Length: 72
Image 1 (cartoon, rainbow, N blue to C red):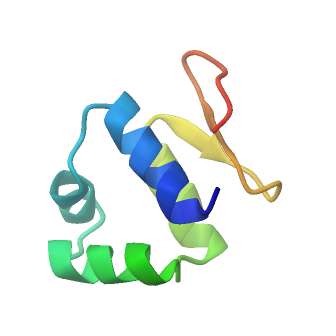
Image 2 (cartoon, rainbow, N blue to C red; image 1 turned 180 degrees about the vertical axis):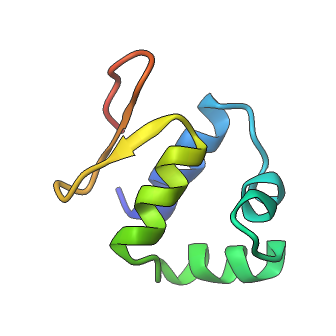
């Protein structure tokens, strides 16, 4: 499972749209979608995305939901 798919799962679990996440990151929806499609997020981007979605991102390439402990 690639990072884009993991982010999409997180968005579904948090009931947030890609557009809303992009706006919270200070990005246009188009720019976010391009990064998502190309999977060009760096570690800091992924940590920020995780924080916006009440999760934690680790070097092990997964997210952990802070409230449930579920790993994605």
